[in-house]
Picture 1 (cartoon, rainbow, N blue to C red):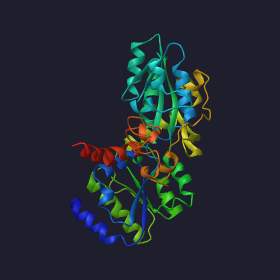
Picture 2 (cartoon, rainbow, N blue to C red):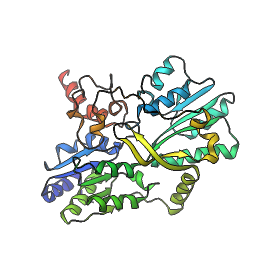
Picture 3 (tube, one colour):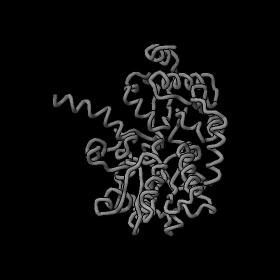
Length: 360
């Protein structure tokens, strides 16, 4: 097994032209910044960010729906911590919690059922945000609630699908992407054939990689070699292998609970069949139907350039607000609010060390 320095040397040897790779996953962006990889890579190998943080692409209209339901009588909203601060048109879940709304932070969808069992006189609402890899756990929770007859629990479905969204981004000639660095998460439920199709459609390389420095470097080497040889494929040889039975069960649960519809993304507009909604036969567990709430357009009050950053057209330093008006202590946009947002990661690993050194 080659050491990271050997892999870096190999990359410097094989990069013989300008190459732009989109880092799809927010956790990959974190790792790349933590390892300070951009400083070590060949100058002609550029890494840009993609829409790989589900909180960052949550539009104001969806947050408005979360807020509206959370303000209903006898409702407890259970949510992941990152979603709390994301602004809607006027309020966030955090701001209404300060005013008395019942909002609890949980770590997994199944925690909602424990809250429901402890509070039979309340309706427990879970805003289900995330990409397709989160869908099986949400589907499993809904099916478990149905089998146990738990009726005081429901979900606001706001799960998004990456392949159609990347397809939409790639249609923009300004993006000019040569490859997609993907994470292991895509193998849990996403159809890997979708990424193979993307590779062929846009003549790009795709590769799954882990989160260690060596894993990322091996993924980049794979893509550079594909580009050099004019090959467009989806390399999943480094993926964590899930049993076919586990994958089949996950897909079965997801198809039993959800189906795909056109969905709005913050900064990217509405993308065809890029989100999941709950099937009518499980409408008891759909909070949008239970509370008669629709996802409106909302009013984006954000003055930052998150839309440019999550579509591969720039990096955080290209935004005039980054590190100045927009910081983790005073975040303006979702890319700084979320711990997996590219702006928050850029600030943590690029700006905070230098600021700490100035005050040493």
